[in-house]
Amino acid sequence: DVKVTQSSRYLVKRTGEKVFLECVQDMDHENMFWYRQDPGLGLRLIYFSYDVKMKEKGDIPEGYSVSREKKERFSLILESASTNQTSMYLCASKRQGENIQYFGAGTRLSVL
Amino acid sequence: KQEVTQIPAALSVPEGENLVLNCSFTDSAIYNLQWFRQDPGKGLTSLLLIQSSQREQTSGRLNASLDKSSGRSTLYIAASQPGDSATYLCAALGADYKLSFGAGTTVTVRA
Image (cartoon, rainbow over all chains, first blue to last red; front, side, top):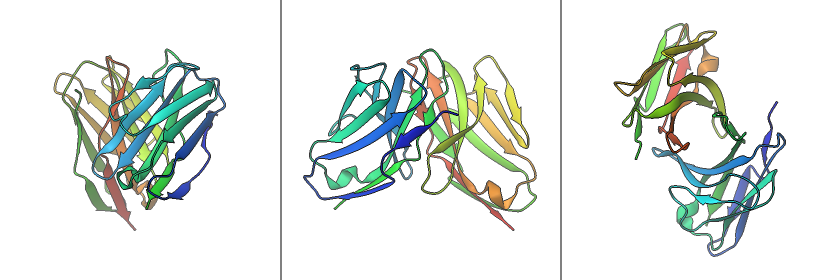
């Protein structure tokens, strides 16, 4: 079974803090994704990565950056957290050339 | 830009009733359409994936249909059970290989 693990289920941070959300997958998938999910808006793509050290902006990259130093790990970084970044963050991965994404359990981030 | 809409946003039915969940998308140039289930506070679990060349997919009590020309997909859940209570999301994989998600339909099955 594919396993996508997000290191934290819940996080509470203060405005202006630097925040790291970590995602690890164990299936040697090349492609990894970060989404945020907000009520009434569905999931929106923040960033994705085709492979190690590669990254592409998604639909809403503003205020975020990412790091993919190892194939299994994809980190989402909030350089200076703001209250409008309070959301559920979901990580996903898939094998290059395949169409099914596998999702982690999500990290619910609250920025106060 | 692909827009995916799910109506209604919420649905409440008595146990045993069949569920019909609707999904519409604006750009018919898709590779596939996927249905997910999400339990409260949890991640997404893939239920069914319909390739663009297919008309429907079935898994147990679940059946999903796809009509690309009209931009619609429907998820049917037969003989609903309280354990089917969850949020159901559809997502279309576009020509850019990006998934576009609907906002979901939250289903409550009353015992």
